[in-house]
Amino acid sequence: MKRLTLTALLALTACRTTSHPTQPSTLGVVRSTADLLAVIDQPGPIELTTVASADWAVDRSGLIDLSDPRAKEAKLEDGAEPIQVFFHVLAHPTKGTWWVDSGMEHAWREAPDRAAIRGLAAKFMNVDKLKVNQAPSDWLAAHPSGVQGVFFTHLHLDHVSGVPDLPAGTALYSGPGEAAASSFQNLVVQANTDRELEGKGTISEWAFAGDASKRFEGVIDVFGDGSVWALLVPGHTPGSTAYLVRTTTGPVLLTGDTCHTRWGWEHDVAPGSFTADHAANVESLKRLRTLVSEHPAIEVRLGHQR
Ligand SMILES: [Zn+2]
Image 1 (cartoon, rainbow, N blue to C red):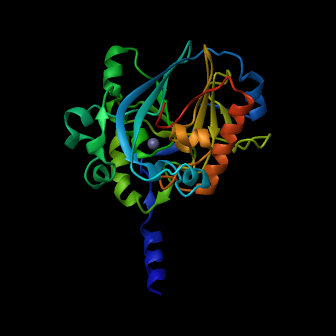
Image 2: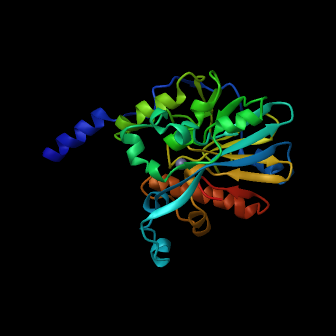
Image 3: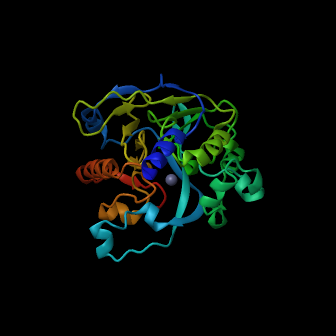
């Protein structure tokens, strides 16, 4: 009885990831995996630069499912795993410059008490192990033409954490249901995510509509010219989105946190406690690995490690 009451209470108090407004995206064309496969191995028009914004370390048990037989066999144990926080700069010859994810705001370096993430959330995030190397503000100072908008892989704090450095009104895009994703942790997290997004554009949610070939939950051709593809890979979060970018030197897959680590990718082991729906994450990781095994020219850039 006691347990039931507690569960009911938690269900009632669980809240959304952010109260920032959302709308269906008008950018992007619904396509299928077959459409993507028709062009995937041809070089595209995008100049892609991955920026390691911050060095950090977090619990290995969050990044890798240590209960997986392959992790046990490798005798992986919990402890601090060194990771990085990235933003990816996509320069399109006619559509401007866009980012995937956002790095870490400069306040983390100069005045952590003024960062959007503070209080209990900062404590949980081991911020004493966080070192900002290249903040979004540093990049903007060197690139006066700026950034049109950000395509998020998902809306966890460490992917939205560079947004405070971006100009007011910057366009934001995420997978469907990311802002509304509900959890008990959001009681602490929501105010921080809201502060990170404050003053920026409404979040446009990719309008995925299934995939005729059933290989992904949804496939969107972001600019309608086959250069950047959004792939719906639910599991880590309900609207987790990977991006396949056709660069001038070949295809690059940005996995987001469907796979955080190099070890996890190489051994087909999904994230651990940081993932919301473990079974769905396992399936989405398999789908991305299958795509890459069939198209070995794809360069893979993982959520938090080179
Ligand atoms: Zn992350």
